Length: 191
Image (cartoon, rainbow, N blue to C red; front, top):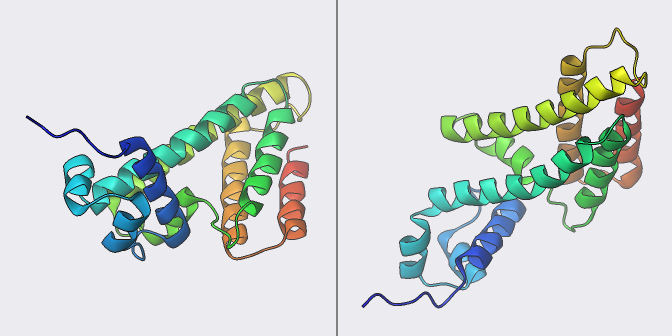
């Protein structure tokens, strides 16, 4: 008869996600994971496979949580949702000390250059955000909030770039004013 799990896999995955987010993939040891997740080695391998498989699941979990509120914010009309994404992102980035930045942006820098599967996932996440921004910018152009000659797809790429730049700045310890100044310039460029 198979043994029942003595831990909650979803909670363990969330704990692993936070460890990877704080320390990065390379600096997070198996001991860090086992201690942080509160599970034994056998349970780890039986449930998650290996460190890399766990990391990919944690990356997906992070994206699910981030994408849901970003998509929701950008569903509305006009630029209000675009502004909400930037201001809420800044608040989220400033919540933690030491600064964590964004697991996706951190991973893009740490692993994407030499891990094609991770690079593909990060690219997919970026395209999802870009598509959501594009939809919001099309509606903003239709309502006259941005000039008719502006290209929503190009502006969306610009916003994604700036949003990831804010995440890197936050990870490096930039203060609120620096992040807000950068966001204000990006948002002003839309008009």
